[in-house]
Image 1 (cartoon, rainbow, N blue to C red):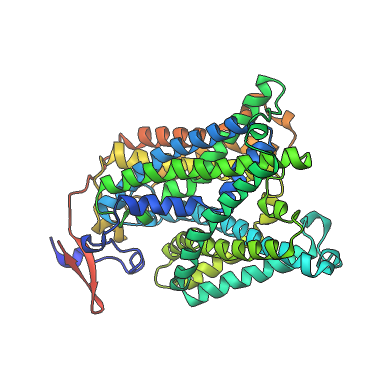
Image 2 (image 1 turned 135 degrees about the horizontal axis):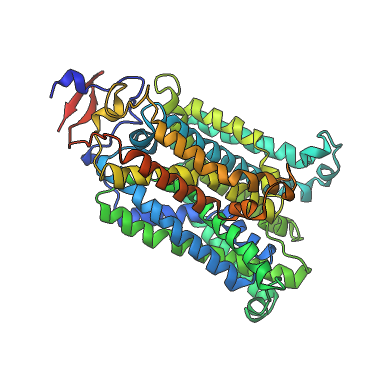
Length: 505
């Protein structure tokens, strides 16, 4: 092979996007299990579970829905993780095989925009924790003059603390991701302790688990239950639909396929279900205590009268949220934005872009109530990411038989160039997979009346991830199976040394 022909295009290659050499692939089974435990133990997971109670489910219905959702999303998680482990490549590079070296930006941007939304949600949670603390010491913050229009749904006090916490996040990005390591250690110790403390409190105040577990479902008919269950299940899958795409960003460091597969099986469904159970128990206790489901733990903490307890808890939540936000919601979109122009956009600039979009997505509205959190946010973005996952899996397993050409993934002119860098089959399949869910989404956000379309079309949105995944995946397969696809041979990978790119076996 001619070495010059193997050199990567500098517009497609950077140190962050380069294949990870075998010497740096050190993650074992327990590293992946620990990763999932750390990512699962967060306030949004608690809110995910308790929002199901707020929506009307009883405890076992909520737990079963969460377990099923995470068991299902584990499948594409492991399947997409295979390419990261085999070739050492991150998600944006993996997407080039199916979407093309330029078309991969479409998949990367869809993933990045969702991450920006999660960044906004986590930032709102951290800012609101600060607000809950300050209102005890400075009551006047609750009665500040309203400066935002009513349509914003944003009070002045929470807006100030949200902006303050957002600036802290941006400062951490300026310092670099290394500065977050100590905060991640703090989070790993604090959140499990805080979660167990909430569980003990809930059991104590209602005198045992009995009253909580006896709390009935609020659904009066089976139809009411199923109408809530299916979009809720889709929402549970949507919760990790982002990671099911960019999981190669993590599995590229795996020692073996066995390590990433076993680690994810051990870590994901178990930790999500166990931490969710705490959210379910605590929320059920609030129904008994206060006559309403308080599914937001920060709102619940605001009902406590002890200033010192609330202050310590809210500061700890803010610090833990900061650590989680940078690690889970900043690294991946920063890489995705860098993929747009590797020579011009670095991690820091990608982080700033993420932060600005995180504000513009109005996160306080997304989590204002259970229906907005599940039906608008989680189900909504699953309708975009499901099709991407279906296309990537169909391409890697059924079209290319798990064979990729590493060198061509970093070349403008190669087997992944397709038509000017775009694979039209992937773009068409993506659009067709998204379209069936558009009417239901527009109905859900009340832009159009439900009578605009036949009922069955609107109901497809309840299965948004499934519809998009299978429609796009199957259509892509049939469009590509008659194409002449160059299956890759095992080829050397790139290594960067002393300012020039060389090839290593």
